[in-house]
Image 1 (cartoon, rainbow, N blue to C red):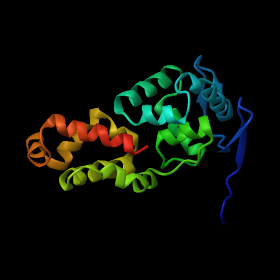
Image 2: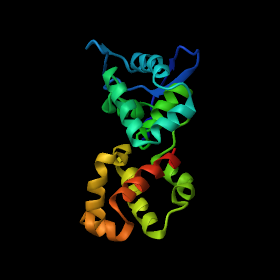
Image 3: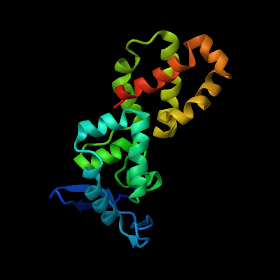
Image 4: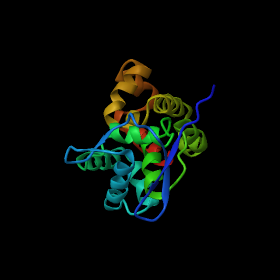
Length: 195
């Protein structure tokens, strides 16, 4: 027997609605520590987002760089919208396999979420352009981790671990890909093409 998921429409300040799954087990908390509904959490988030980015292009630009993405996530965390809460919102909008970018873009601009795998497939050519086959192989490795685990894999803090997993040492990575600074540049630069 198939169970149909109940949907709830949340009316936002722009007069438009966003559809979410009805999940009574999911609880959210306001910045002052009081329990609130998922709908109220999303309404509050929607109200905060314009102070963090003006439009879709600005969100894409900010999200496409690890340093500015981290600052945005820290700003959201300070306002009570941490990564875990945003991931819960992702489940509510049936975007658990999507990037947190898609969660924010859906709430802010009503853009349909795409999965991380779809995002990689649709941007692969732009990502690989200008990179030799060794760099493309490394980027494939990074993208596989991104698809499997999420946007956290694209943090510059993760780069040493990814290098260790793929090449077993920085020395081996340098022999394959070039100087460490260049490896970091490739890692940071490709991300703007992912969004």
